[in-house]
Length: 485
Image (cartoon, rainbow, N blue to C red; front, side, top):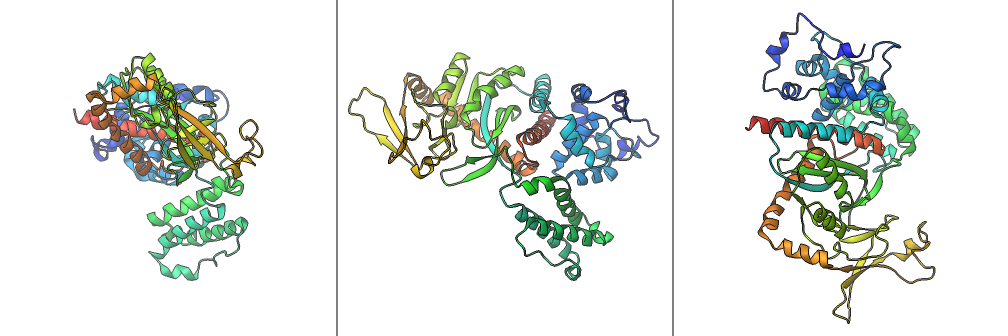
């Protein structure tokens, strides 16, 4: 039965954990902080309880994924380390002499057991509940922002991906034994994916034939990464596509192909809500969802802090309706009054330009001069008609034969005037200083937990990656704040 696997099997060697896993060990602290039985309760209906052999405890499988995120390792490396790292075995509720899982089980767990489970909201709500119970969250302000994650595929061609990983593997080998150059297969020079796959397979076989060399950690990690790419992702490499990923714009001159994670965070740096979308979605449109999710978790909000992307009229009105102050500086382009086709054109605050629903960005903007001073000012954004002519959305948007395509917005309404007055207040100025905290949190996700690049393809995979990564950083932050009391 699965239930029987929730507690550690009694072992005459269990006492070793008291010796080798100190009280200040991060994994011991996480085990003491969180009762992971909620994972079992959520996943119970994903298992057959009366047929087939016993499944590995879902809580243990989830903990493997959490370890993978905390230490930013591949499936194979995280399982390998759990063979000899006693802090890992303690965290996984295993007896010291227990065998570990096969790494392939993690892939199946992600695809079969976590499918259709709203893991993102569930895990964030769990950590927010713990933080509130511990009295860690005292503020009533949330800081909002979005961070981008590049798609795993299509940044480079499939062949380029394999070339890059095989090159890193060879380099790690040469640092130990340069004579391996004479043993390695001849590099592929044909611009065909199939030939590159064959070369990588031969390279792996040559390294694995030297057991001593393959056992070096820096070689082994890169060997496992290349092997995992060939074994798990060969189908995706052949497709060379992430069907869900979209092009987003970081600035007027730079873009990325992937996803966005929209985040709400307390002043204590606990993430209270998140929404993961494709890369082209604007930041401001996700504000309402983030705030509603945060309030559903029991967090009381009186202030929202964000950059200019969140100061559009609808968000100001939403904040006012809920008795919340929106500390978001007005941007003359974002602060539209009544404008046409709001759902078809979205403002990109980093580039300072509008983007149409086809993903094309305006290349210049012009302030319109109004003779009647009582009329609102307007700004016209110009789009490249060479793209409009062949766009699949041109019907009703671009008129055949037109020499230009523009989109015009008016600025400053009564709602915006009130917001302008609020900007001048000392409260607005003081709260604005808190916004840097979420930028640091985004950096932590990317540089410490592998959130810069998606670990798999597809929006579902990205949501799983985001759920576990945010759960990990929240747990670490809660533990740090508890220790600082």
